[in-house]
Image (cartoon, rainbow, N blue to C red; front, side, top):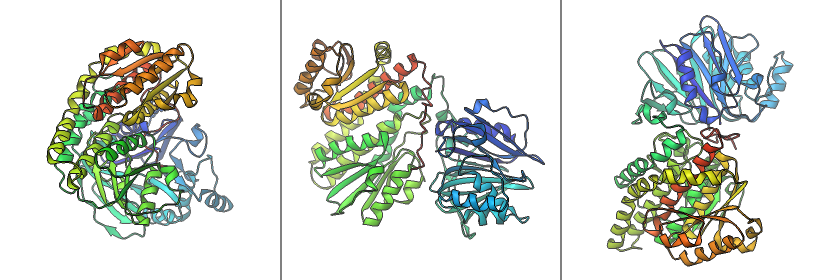
Length: 586
């Protein structure tokens, strides 16, 4: 869940590495460090943010790291890069070395001295153990001893090359002119090049100023294709917004439009299945829950939804199933492991991700890409809304192919979907109104979100956004379940956010609103209906839309509510405590 970078070329390595790391800080911010070769191996690393680094050396080749702690507390001595006993080799690592304890014991018995509590440090000593004057050869020998997940970059003070390897952790190469780049994610080097090579599991790269060579872990040369990324560097910058999260919330109309355009240009849709299993984590799990409602409503196929971490450890009967695996980064370890299991069981598998060439694409039969562009804020916004758009489109397209809806109904649904970017743009005009409402929410200790039907997952997502960036305790409930326990939590002044679309649940939702209001709750209604105002303390009136599509305008409202609440409380919005963007460890 860490971020690694590497550079070799003619520029200031210090500047490239630090600028690149800042674009990866969403992947972890417990500590940071860089190593640069300029005749000597120079290392600087510190606990905390990248801005804590005070680097008074430079060169034109180096590696860097920003950490989300797994093994070892966030301390200076546990920060990357790690060096060998002689101070000649430096490594950075993202992932977990599962057999590190055994390797560490063996290396200590042979005289190696360790200075950290991490699993990663064994890599530097293992390369040192095999080094006999050929850095490349030592690197290959060392990585064959490693078990677990890893993306590793290494340098030696006597050689002008970077060696790197990928296994179940993301790693991409940026191709320049007389310079080359390495990173965990494309935005890290996007200001320097848009020519990208994505490494697959078990692949090694060797970078110098003038070439990028690729190998299997056994040392066999392989050819790789260069891809051109159409993101601009401005896509990865704040562009005048106070936080990346706010910028990304306001980018949602374009992200929706781009994703819909991409989906409509796709020709390959025919798939045979009798039921669907959807697997995801976190926010993507909520997208899967929305997808369940929509697919069962339109396509009339039964859908099961599982957390990836739970799916892996349950018995499974295939019975003509299709597996859909949703991960914004394409690198979520639990989701990838679940996809592997489904393939072994004989499922037809489909991945939904935002990153071209990410790891999930290697373990599924087909991929649907969301076109959200880079998302830097840890709290997912535009990647979530494009995931649910993709699931809506999948349901509509497959229903037409299977004859579950008429041609007329198909075109009506598609036209309604095409209006979603505009509906979201109208919702964003409520920003000032939502900002004022956030003043009251920011004073709460607990916040509850209630909804029914397709909007119940949106209540869950609204609660998740509130707690992950504002640190206020928040829960989402199906409104009909209130009287089965949650009503005990309602007391005078407790905020309850009620999603009240004008659908078949409308009258039932009003009854639930009256239930919490009678017990003293401060009720915020989110609805297109002006009539709701008489039942709530305040109304956030969203644009009128097809009730089936109400999750789009509702989730944007809840994203803004969470954002402004966190901003009022002075939270670190783009980098909430203890969390990282891409969860690449299990």
